[in-house]
Length: 344
Image (cartoon, rainbow, N blue to C red; front, side, top):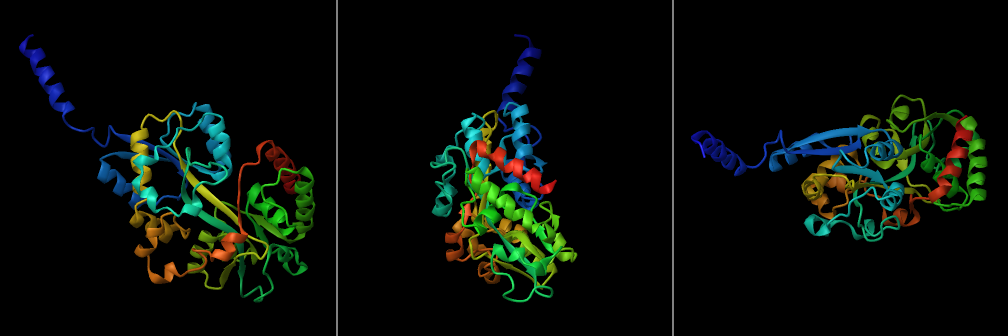
């Protein structure tokens, strides 16, 4: 071997003894916009000497379509709502999660695990969960004037009601108001919900899911649907905004970590999930977005006023009356049909 080749070999061996630089070691994360504290991402990058390539999507449908087009490649950690997990797992889009590599999972509330959409949590783990309830402006709506979903149909609220721009949330509200499951697959019940929602049209002023607290802050809406986290954040700008859990039962939702089947950084993806589950990082999620964190130890890192805030942490009785949004199979076409009719 020539001296030149010996030198190259020695250099190669020397370089191999060192870990990849942050520029070479990249974790591709795909999430909703403004749904992960920047300081948490930066802390992960520093601890693991990696670069997090953070991309965003607007809704579950867009995320699902893009992963399909990419043959489940290009991303290492993705976030999906409950009603997409079963479908994606069934279609072979997801890698199995090795829970032994996520020791912080031991501190996650058991009630968030083993849900119908993924009974063994083989393909998903909870990231953030929350509640869809009712918000109202106390300067425009009297105390006790709204207690449940049905109250939104009152003639007193003409052109004052805001609805989320989400088919399952809106139909879930109407189904709950009629005593049905938000996960019904019966067209007759979905049609009943549509007919009830048609009667709500004179009250609807706007549909908004991008920033659903804004119509309240600007005065465009005085009452309507709201996610509890957004209600918490909005109240910091608007003291007169109140949030309640409807008497008929709230709509519970959960966004979840998933690992695409085509991920090339699955080991790093597991490290990322475990890092996010650290209680101090979970507390930062709560403070920044107002949604309850899955790790029960997160509370000890939060101010007492936040720990005791019922908008962030729903009372147990209200959780028990609520219902998680699950996949409805081919019935989603029925929902979409009536959704388009409602908004046309």
